Image 1 (cartoon, rainbow, N blue to C red):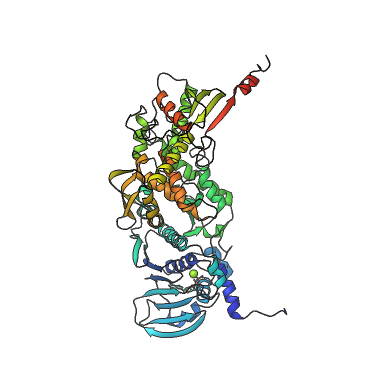
Image 2: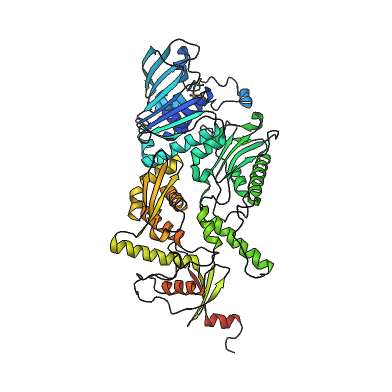
Length: 594
Ligand code: ADP
Ligand code: MG
């Protein structure tokens, strides 16, 4: 091919690719524009996954009649005149690219009226070409309607995820901005249904509750290092009891701009050092305020990256502020208190270890709630406790897969020590119980197609909008496994029953655990939805590490494990036991051949 300058249209489509990657990026750009226009209210309506239609309506300043066309030109902005202005920037936008980019890959209708003008304008642009324009009467503000997104860029369409993923991304973008702008009222409607609303009260705490759901909102701790700090850090971070399997719930804003920054995210994680198990991450929403001249926001077209003049100082400010808030909270009596009563006079070291195990136990749960606490206080076992290990009458006499084992005792409230003909066995009580429950559950499911249910006094569940969508999408799958959950108003559900083996677990914690697993489900090669539900149910129902078991309970557990089809691994594939053969023992003690 000979060299040729690309036609304007192709240039525009290529450039658009950098700014609008997916429907959620369109929403983000339009939200930023509304916020820059000093809107007090922004209403976002989505159809399908947003490719069909996105409407963003604000009550901001509006656009002057004689500027509506300019607004759609590339590099046209009212927010910046010279490069130098970047160091004083107080707006989210400045590149003048969003409207041009969006218009290049969709059909855009703009309706706007500037506050200082009598009449407004309505304009239609398709694939970047002006199709229609007329004068209209309208309240001051701007309504942008984006339809047929990516209709002329088939390659981009192919890269979009499933409809549900895109919907969730959109909800996530909106909740994020709602948290950064608590004094602005945000309303999100999907397919004509309102799924999220903030009240613009100005209190971040109110928005946190709307955004994370009441359940999680309650577990958030306020962070604030003080208004006078040069690098101010404020917002909310989770008590260690609320944690996640990935870092995606750590949200950071710098001067009101949502940013993605691995290093600063790590500062938040670091603040939980020794408070969270490895592989668990906090939930946080933090606002960082820093003089504009200390940062460079012009790093990437999506403006989601920021460079700091002194990154280390920002890192340490975040880490300190979060750490202090979490530690202070943890020291308040009541949060971890009342869980540990040492039998007799144990040595200090033992007590420390034991306490650590107790702490781990609470950290292991996505949401320990009242129930876990209660369950822990009366460590002594209840015969009717369905999680008590002894096998039920229904347990079929399956062939033995392990030799007969004699239980000797428990180590660290987590491992069962047993002896068999071939030596010593150290059994991980949680992993082993997970395996047992998993096989029982699958048998039950195969034989009856239905799972024994436990009816609850109806419990309500308040979720974040994106979690609510995820739950809605999976209600049928959950039903097949004994969960009876019904939508009950905006982002609220009623739980009427759960699988019988979860009878004494906190339903909110169980469902939140399942949602967490499903949330991560969009990566290829991940387990099927059904598998995830079963695995999570068994994990939640199994005895925890750190739970003291009676000899009978241990014996019951081992008896059942001996007849599992695959007794050597838990359903996640981790080992349930370590075996030390008699020969190995002899070798270790130097008795071999003696
Ligand atoms: P930028 O936000 O970087 O300036 P955009 O392409 O997003 O670039 O918008 C171009 C211009 O259009 C903005 O600078 C602003 O003047 C105007 N504009 C866009 N959206 C709105 C809105 N919702 N209300 C008022 N003005 C808007
Ligand atoms: Mg903009």
